Length: 542
Image (cartoon, rainbow, N blue to C red; front, side, top):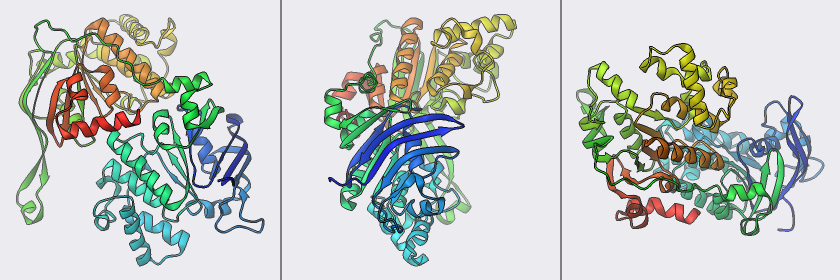
């Protein structure tokens, strides 16, 4: 452990003459797990990409001496990665240093099966024949715990779940048994149970193959469970580093303390006991899709996939109903039915009204029920200004307002969500790409609030955000609920978000509601084994 596998000194990375990483130092020993931690924009991903020459348009300087080359040049088994020509770096990538990217759906080629993509690496890097590479690809998939690996090797990325795609990415990265694995946010897009599984898998494979791992993440709580040492980055600078136990026990830098304290805090009004008409009520709600039946029957008769099975719930004014479940549980489909965006069977009443074929009646419901989506960058039109985006609902539901009146309401909404700070008028002509992720989500919330709804459907509203920004957005939602008496239908897989926001909780799996009740009852004394499985990883991680 005394020998260094990678020694980085005075690493600086700049784009168009502007430095984003400022002379940082760190090192990794063989078999060690080092975490590089920081929020979006801290420079952690650019640091990792620059080691392999993958930061497009970047100018890197400093030293990154790697001693694990399997085919050393004339200078020996070590080389400065930053000084290697592109041709030499191609030999290092995948063979000696491999990388797992954050979003496997975009990192994997949609035109080739996962087995073909893994086999391609083995053919290029190890010179295996196509038949040998295919068998090795199946063995690698089996090594990552994918069930029925021979069949899954022939599947395309869109045919796999998020966890399976991430396992396929890990199999591809480990194809050539690299000495160093760069894992860029490998669990961010996954459910909490899958997060735990992927971390356990990486730990197991790391020990089995004796490789070092550089984990890139914004979540210090994951670091506590996985890493040996941690390097904390802020705005391109290393602000703190050391053994994980030491940094967590006595963080020295204010930024590190802020990250550690970024767990959501509960600050909601108690559930009201006053009787009143529910904001939303469902009885035996059922959502199904037509699918092709298997075999010859599929030529003559369509099958049916039931996404939501007999769901019943009541949401009272000023309360939050949290819907928990893993990907594919049916929780987002339930939200779409509540929003009237997909057909359903059963009874669904929103403020005493139901969706119908009468568009005038539906328009009244749409004013009362608004939505905030998971990814604000894709839900906000890139061609519309802030004034147009936030004021769009006023044009539909308050057409009599003049442009000056609409502008005043938009500026008031921006101030209300913490965007204006007295200067909201200067934001009106800007576009979504000019804002950070947290600011874009605040714009999405302002847009939803413009028509004064009674119910907000929150579909994973913080899962795409850094932990500190997540905490800020949750605090905003809590304040708005207290001040306006809003009701929330909160869709999430994050137990901590549920704990901070919800009054009542429903747990869904495979379209069914397995358990429901008050927050304390469901999270502290869960009755169903699946609920216990969802809650347990959060307790382990934190």
